[in-house]
Image (tube, rainbow, N blue to C red):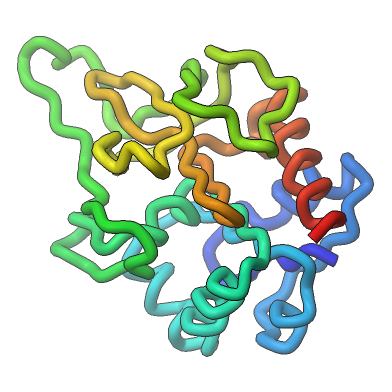
Length: 208
């Protein structure tokens, strides 16, 4: 069973529907015991970084999720679920993240060269592999996925940045290290290829 963490911040049901489409056994939950007993953890995210961290802490889920990741349990972070893996975010003043990876989550800032680019970055964009994570099996390089975000993680952490996307600046669109997988785009909104990413994660969980 895969636990989709419900920490009171939207977009959960469409992720659940996506997993159900690939035949995954999923439960939407904020129950620590259920998350502990799951085969994999999915943390989807829409909203503010600070609220996300505060809600996870309030529900006694923050330390639990960090510990479960540390034990090797597969984790899939979507959008904000990618960003909170890092040490801090600039959103509404600096806010601490899970600190599993060093880096600051920054807001897009465009000079005159890119002044036509709107914030948030919203819509379809291509994803270019540095290395292909196993959950992207059979997904071609430079495939297009759906993004909605105003903040990004830079590409300097070469060992964990599995794919990049350009929107005025290159940013990490897929992060992968061992059992940690995360996408800045929304697989659940990215039609067939996005569903294939969810299928790939389900496969990893089944074999865990």
